[in-house]
Length: 191
Image (cartoon, rainbow, N blue to C red):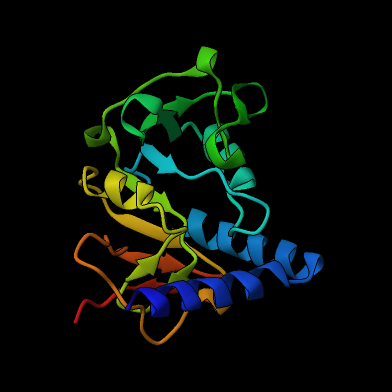
């Protein structure tokens, strides 16, 4: 099963990296519009990943949600136990610096730790998803570890090409409840 997961992850990563920049921009706009329309107005505390260049984009989404008065929390790395925790983001331009794995995260002076229980929704990335909500992330398990402690709806953002018929899962994999692509909002149906 590991080889299958690795091969699937590698295949979708290659496809995702080959998306034309203009198509990527248009897809990101659609994903962000669908996400804004989908989010419940009562969900004030939102945990959101800070996207890398090849992931479904969240930078404009984060800026928009902050302007709308939502509290945004992003992953911050804790070296002590090799894990991530939610940290409130107030100023994306000045608070974020390249962190572990080169992904933007709060700088040491901008850390504002929060508890996982404060979150109203958890917007998470992935490399591969299926309609049941199963996902493959980057392979490190960081988002699964966080998701296990966040008792809020889990929302995956992805390009449609990241959607497959079946994702092979392990017991520690945490599925998403909803998946938003440039084409649709999927209410994930658990078998």
